[in-house]
Length: 391
Image: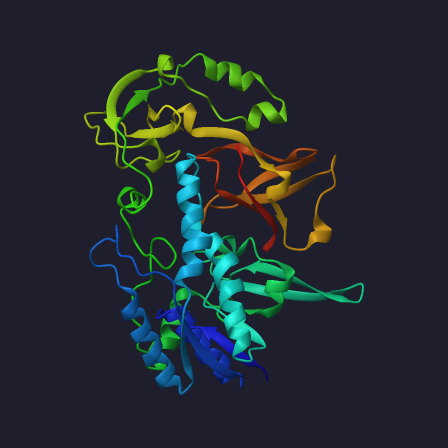
């Protein structure tokens, strides 16, 4: 049996992960990490970090395992929050949860766990780990969780072989109701606790208020683009990979001003809320942002052509392969199942590797593709790789 440090978060998933490992005979240590102090923009009613720590301690006491605490807020701000601010400032849409797993949970936190003598680090993620011997070495794979409604493999799509080597996902074969049932049977304090939501370790936030810590509010104009905009035909006529992956580019002359906003960097493609414009038969959706001119472009209805694109691009330096030997060579192409956001059903697509990066061409146009998002590609239930969408 092994010495395993469990990242006790104060939630039910990590609590049950710790119980399962102890049941299996491992030497289990609970480690709680505090990653955020500031409450700017946090919505009222969101559980603050001290509640999380209290619940984590109660679980450790119930399981009779050692409990430790570590403050990683400085590293979290540097590696995750500053990145998030920088991306929004550029008019891009980052995913801090993916960064948090790559940079904090399976890097800084992992190193803290190793200081405690850990042989493995376990989390309450709904995903699984596979391993096999290939050419005399062990190759690790990241697999989707059994519970399709809770599968969190997308959030871990940037992990490396070295990080997976140390990782354990004890609840990956269970469904959420099964996890809740175990927690109730074992009388764990977290059994009925609500799942956390919002930004990893920050919680639910009013995003514009949160971002205003670094990004100033700036009045700008909202312009509406009609679905009959003639340039859509021109875009659709370009069937090269570069053309299909190119985002729509609007100018203020392409649409009529219908309102004002407080800063283009607070909005993202596909967003519906926060525009403050009513009186329409259908909702208005953001179809373009321009931080240089501080302009937002919107379209009416969820079938508006500006919401959908056929392809996306990932620059070469942003491509990540969980097992590097599976990387496609320039000129190669391969079928994958792909998602661009958590819980999105997997979409059939073909990846084409070119000198300047990978192009992913979907079988059906995708809604809300935005630069800065992570795209992950799968082979069955195995995450093969991921990357940041450049366009």
